[in-house]
Length: 61
Image (tube, rainbow, N blue to C red):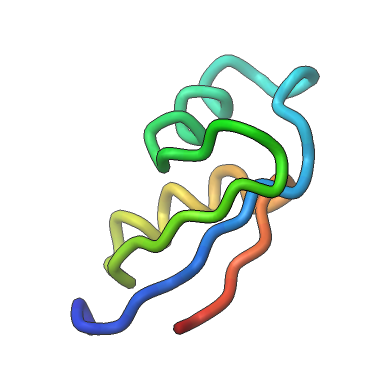
């Protein structure tokens, strides 16, 4: 499972988001809207994405 990767793209602004959600987006390495990062597909990454699923788009690579 760890050899798989997921692409995470920030699709909505964090301006109206809760402080915890802003920290999660920052921890994922997302800086601006439409910024895309790749992370290993681990339960920790999936949990972080679940917290901000309304702000991001996920693609399996």
